[in-house]
Every structure is written in C-alpha cells, then in structure tokens.
Amino acid sequence: MLGNTCKSLGSVVAITLVAAIAAAGELERGQAAREGARLIAPPMQDWFPKAPPLPEPTGEIVNVKNVGELYAASDRVKPGGTILVADGLYRMPRTFYIKTDDVTLRSQSGDRTKVVLDFADCRHHEGVAVSYCSGVTIADLTVQNVRQNGIKINSNHNVDRVTIYNVISHNVWQRHIKGPSVPDKDGQPDFAEDCRVEYCLFYNDRPKQRGDEPWEDSEPRMGFNYIGGMDIMCAKGWVISDNVFTGIRGKTGEARGAIFMWHNGTDCVIERNMIIDCDTGICLGNSSARGERRHANGFIVRNNFVVRSSESNILADHTRDCRILNNTVHDPDSRNGRLLRVVHANDGLVVANNIFSGPRIVAEHYEGQIDVRNNLIRPVGEYFVDAAKGNLHLTAKAADAIDKATADRGILTDIDGQPRGEKPDLGADELAPLGKHTAPDQR
Image (cartoon, rainbow, N blue to C red; front, top):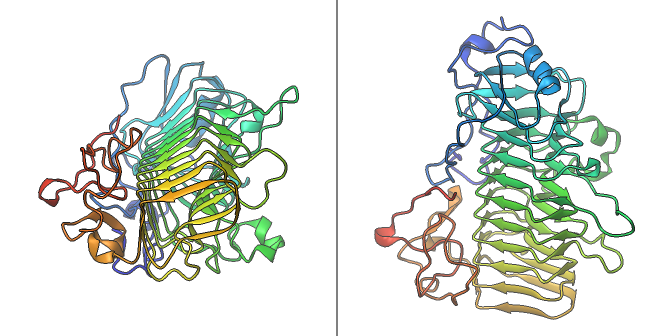
C-alpha cells in the first residue's frame, strides 16, 4: 500500500520480518529463515508494473541456502552459471561481489519478497557489486539496509550488459544503483553499455538523517540530501523501464534524482516508470558539464508517471537531441514550480504531448534550439484515478487530454503497454475502454 496521504507516503511503510525472526532472534548469521516465508511488506498497488517470470535457468546451477554457501558460490560459479538462492533472510557480513561473465543471481522461488540480502551488519558500505565482467543478471530478490550503494555496477572496471530485474531495493542511504564514470579509452569516450533495469521497486521508509551512512556524517554540507535512486555515468544503450521509485527523500527535501543520468550518457531509454513522492524525479544531467560533452545525448523519456517530486520533476540540463514525450507529471503544490526544468545547453530537445499537472514548467537560461509543444500545463488532478496515491491513469473526465496528442512513431503504446490508437491521448496513459487499466507483460 502507498499510504493514505501524500505526506505520509514512504514514512509509514515499515519493514516487516516474519515473527519467527523478529521475536525469537534465533537465526545465526548465515542461516536462512524458514522456507516460503514472506520477509518484507513493500508498498505495492495493483496498478504497478508486474514482472513476467524469467525462463528456467540454463547452464551450471549452484544452489545455496545460507550466507556461507552464497559467498562460496560467487567464487566457484562458472561463466554462464546461475546462483539459485533458497528463500530466507541472509545477513550479509561484507560486500557481495560478482566477477564472472554471464552469471545470474536469482531466487529459487522467483518471489522477490522471500529472499532478502540484508546488509545492516555489513562491515562494508556497499551491497552487491559487479566488477570485471559482463552479462550479469540479478533478479527476483531484495537488497536492503545498505549504508551507501545498494547495487554497484563498477563500470570503471569493464562492466557491460548488466540486467537488474524484479529486484526490491529498500533503505539504501546513498544510491540504490550506482554506476561510476568510465575513463576514456585511447583518448575517446568509453561507456558502460547495454544495461537494463526493469520491474524493480526502490523505496525508503523515511527521509535520510544523520547516522544513516558515514560519509555524510563527516561531510554534512549536503544537509543529509546526498541520496538518490539511480546515479549512472557514461551509460550507452541502457533501458530503464517499468520500475517504481517511492519515498527517496533527503532531510530537507533536496535528494538527488530517482533516475539521474549524466557524464556523456548516450542513446538510453527511460520509459514506463512510476516515481512517487521522491524529492527529485528524472534528471538528464546537472549543472556540472564542461566543454563539448553533454550529460545526456539522444535519450528518450516517455510514458512515465512522476508525482510530487518538487525539487525537479523532470530536468534537462546540458543535453543534446533528447526527447521528453507523453509523460504525466502531477505536482500541483510544487514549491519550486519545476514540473519540467530546462536549463543550460539543450539543443535539439523536444518536449511534446506531456501532461504537466501543476503551476508551470521552467525553461530558464537555456542555449540551443528547443521544441516545446502540445503539452497540457495546469493542475488537473481530477483527471486521474487517484492522484493522492500516484495513480495517474486517466478517467473519462480528462477532456483536454483524450485524443489530443499528436501521433508519434516512437510512442505506439502507453505506460501499461496498451496500444495508442490513431488519436492518442496526452500523457503516459491511454484511456482504456470502460476506464479499465491493466499492467500486461511488456516482454
């Protein structure tokens, strides 16, 4: 559940461990909980994206049922193998590294609430880390209670083609997913290529505060706002789709983006995500760019819901040839009025067919030719099924949105994967027959 009011969202959602674990505390580190137990109670709604099940594993299968076996499996698994994790709570003593090509780490049951990698007592500050390999998949499990980076894609160490699928990331106090800068190769830009983040849920129970992680405790100038969802540098060909981000907030409401892409990102797609009550929504870049390299090049941002991300709901800052199309943003009481913020160089930017339900969009001090057209810009909360909870699917009341978009060859379906039709609607959702909305498989 998402809570009854927008102010309480995120803070009322608490981790719930099974009674046998919480009350008795009899599990030693490395011992799993009883098989089949649901270990967390994440905030879910029936209109959230639903992950199709993965195919059965192929190649070598390494079955694990406790922490010792899990770490041993990461050392012994061969390229193309699968580490299959039994249901349980795994109290992780240190960062868990994957360093072998084409390895899959996934739960045996396929239920992401029943395998929990808990880093609360970890002596390191990062959870799962991928280094010196490509083709890794992490799926169908939970990573939680990480002081700094929940899942670290060490893209500065030759990592490509990582898939993060149907994962819950819970209570991570710097970045839920981090991808650092990639050094140039022979004087030319290099990238972390062809990664996918799909059908994941990223949430924190409360805003960040002193004591959550050591770096900001020692560097408090950030105001305990140095926290975000995904922070990815030098990405090329990434797809970020069908995820939910909720309650990722800093102490004073100035957290970094739920999705933050920068440092020469190229040809990435951000689509069908739902961002609810995070301080900042989707950020293509920031103000740090220097020289000719832009933060985001050729990005497509389409069919997303962004709800009450008042620091900036959608930001374009030092971009080139990016397209922001058919998104629905709802922030009627926005303290900054930044339903969309366009600043600095953004030549070739197209912003079209969006619903910005709030006071205004901001295009300030920008350079280059931009094309902002056919957007609905005013508070229209009555158009949506349940704006307070973040459900921005359209109702029949959305008279100024229904059939008002211009057709685009790149926007053939909506946030639920339903076809757009000859007269598409503005925003991320295409009003379904009889007002019914489903979340069909996208794959």
